[in-house]
Every structure is written in C-alpha cells, then in structure tokens.
Image (cartoon, rainbow, N blue to C red; front, side):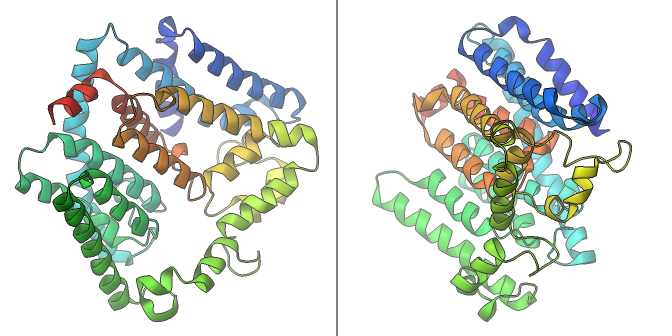
Length: 371
C-alpha cells in the first residue's frame, strides 16, 4: 500500500513536469544529482536503493504537483483543491477523536495513540493535527466553531508526544497574536490553560517518568539531557541528539559519505526487500525514534539536507510576502528535523506541502486582506 501511495505521488509529479521551469528545475536537478552520485558508489542492488530513494522522490513530486495546482494560471483549480482540503481537514480532525480515545483506552498514553496513523504514529498525528487546525482556523465563522476546532486537539492530550508542550502554546500564540492588548492576553490565557491541563493530566496518569510528574519536571535539565542526549546504553531507543552525533561521526569518516550519505534504503527493508549488511550492523542505531536530520544525513549527506532546505525556501518564496502561517510551518519543519521523521509518511507529506503552498498562494493572501 505504501509503495502504491508513493507511486501515485510520483505519478502526479511526472504529470506536472510541464510546469517545471526556472529555479525549481535547478532544485530538482540538484537533488536528483545528489541521489545519482550516491548510487554510483553504492554496492547495493537497484531495488534496495530505490526503496529508500522513493521517500525523497515523493517530496520532489508533491512539490511539482502543488506547484502546478497553485500556478497563477490555475486559479480555478486551486480554489477547487482548497475546498476539497477544507472538507478533508474537518473529516480528518473529527475522525481522530474516537480512534485516539479507543487507542488510549486500550493502551494508555503512548505511541499507540496515533489515531488513523496507527501504532507509532503519535508524532505524525500531532504534527498533522497542528497544521490542519491552523489551516482550518481561517474558515471558522464564530467563536463556537473556533472552540469546536480547538477541541480537535484532544488526541494530543491522549498520547505522550512531549513536543505538544511546544506546539499547542505556539499554535495559540500564532493564531491570536496581534499588536493589541486583548489579543495578547487571550493568547497567554489560552496557552496557560493548555499547559495547566497537560500538567494535571500527566500528573494524574503517572505515565511519564520525570521528577515531580509535572511540566516543570519534563523540562528540567536532567530529564531533557537523558531524553535527548543520553548514552547509547541508557535505553532501548537511543536518544535523538545522540543519534545525530553518532550518525555524523559515521558519515564524517569519509568526505564522500559526509556530502552524499552512506546508502539509500538503510531505514527500510526486512520484509519484501532484504536489509543490507551495513543496515543490519547498525540496526541498534537506525531503529526506534529517528530525527529527520539524522534520516537525511545517513542517506543523502549534507548536500541532500541542503537540497531539501533549498526546496522548502523556494516553496516558501524565500520569506517574501511573509505571514504567520509561513513562519509557523517553517518552525514546524525546523522542530521536526530534531524530533521525528514525519516527512516519511505520505499522508503528512500531502498535508504539510499543501499547507506550505497554500500559505504562499494568492487565495490565502486575499483571506489575510479580508481579515
């Protein structure tokens, strides 16, 4: 199913090649060239390598497709897709609540509470909900609808995604912050309310192991140091920053692997396609939670990371005509680099890149002018 999903996204990108021109064509060629260089010295089979390359190709393909949808001469198509996405956002957000509650009831606050993304999908669910709520907030007509929209963040209370402590207050501040005292006060009260609920929720469940079972304990120096930079023997899942450091050390042994990565497909295989000997030898490192910058570095090196940044900056129009949604999405991406690899999930790829293109569209600009 995942291969079919990837194939569909890549097919949409191929059908959009007629709109490939200018700087976007340079970015696409740069990313493809980086992949080709890596494959030129890889000893793995073509199928094994392509199993990993497709997770990068879908980012390029979805960018090509939405570039066509939001082109200046496709205003009607863009309006149609925005309407489709509005309906999808409502359906998606509402559907997560009963699914997440059932998962919470069966497994407690854990990675099992991933909504329709399933087990281990809690982080992807959190990022998807945050992006969709920001998108849908521009279409609420009254305060009742806004309250109901915020209630769709309930699944974030039911799983153990610690990054929600950052995203939920950040969302409230971005949505309500304006240079007027009442809006600033409202944003502070809203953020404080969510933090209060989180504090009591985690304190009562006891599902987290940090000093005092409180928000202060979660953000204590000892807990963060162990959670992000503990040694490789401290837990079954190597901490995020430790993985990044170890991945850097592996790649930096050779200038070629530092620039172009170790091998594509290292994070996949084991079911239909057999894992390589190298992947098996470092399974302890690549399994479990994976920061996205670690995933990119190990497969494509520093140049793949640079290529993805170049692509996102292009989509974001290099922060010209800046607005809160554009800044919010870029912050989401920067946090994701050190948090998880949600951009490997096809569903989130569609949501995130649609929001990126929408935030830079003429349609969204008109909404801001009417606000």
